[in-house]
Image 1 (cartoon, helix red, strand yellow):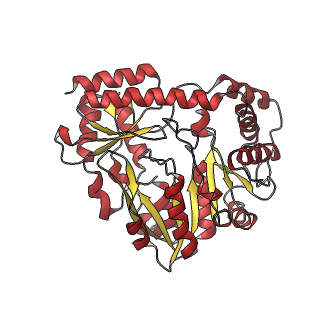
Image 2: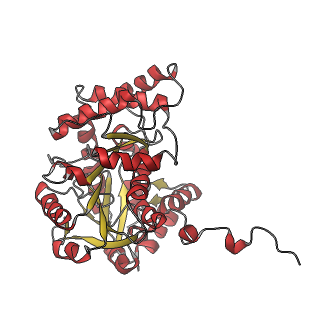
Image 3: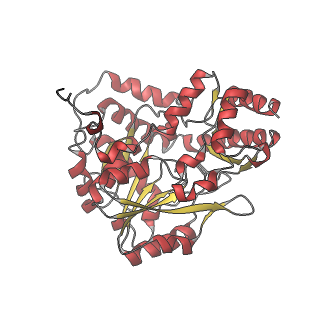
Length: 398
């Protein structure tokens, strides 16, 4: 019998054959099937700020053609001004800023541009799930070091553990602060200790800082790129999605030295030629307006209120939340509910309680997955009435 083409076992390349469907797709589908409140996937269910939408409307009748590979000059200039204010150093919009299709493309493109097959990349656990996938696609090797909660519920990095996974083959560290999903914000002192190891071992840093405007209780964000010796080896990524509640715009950026910018753009030109022009220009308007209109303070206050409400609701439901210092996620200890692991707890939650949380074991390597067996991640980037209904369902389930 003649063989059909393609043969089923030849359809997928080896580098993607082991990938499953992302956990966010799976649990958002379960939310729809069970008409559950989705506190799993981290997208706001409320409208963006009015001034952001005014900026978008201003651009809809404007220029609609390709932008430059590096991004529209107006946006790059707005970003350079913002980072100069925040970092206290000049940023060249022409050679040190690249616009990306969200931070996720920035992650993927940076790793493809800088990692060769066999290079090792250190990932802190729990991690955003695109990190190991991007390393795998580049032929790199993931090395894992877990963040651990202390007796007071704060997450910390054991520096001896970190040093133990850094080897002569280590090319890059992926550093996410404020951290998804733990909500940990690394202090300047912690970042300096990490920087010292990176400098000593000539390690690059991909700094994912998409939650840099979501810190609570008076904390201030520190970028590792601002520490002595780190500018030339750090690629800082962020986006407008989380800050302005426009996750569907997919406008992100990379801030780094001219040499690393060149490497990034050499790869990006073959992934896509440009990013949506009107959304870039609207993003520039939002960033420029936020420098003076007090929006960032309002954002922090709003989310801190939502965090505090959800933390109290989880406590009332017999869960033990680990108080996040930033982001819009809470990880809670589920031990008192008596389930074997995070998957069984979260499945019970969606099918019997009508609330979706994400099982964090998906954000760990197999060797450390047991650390998440009695944890669940909840998102509080939702309308107050949605959080209130979720609280009621959780409370009535106990």
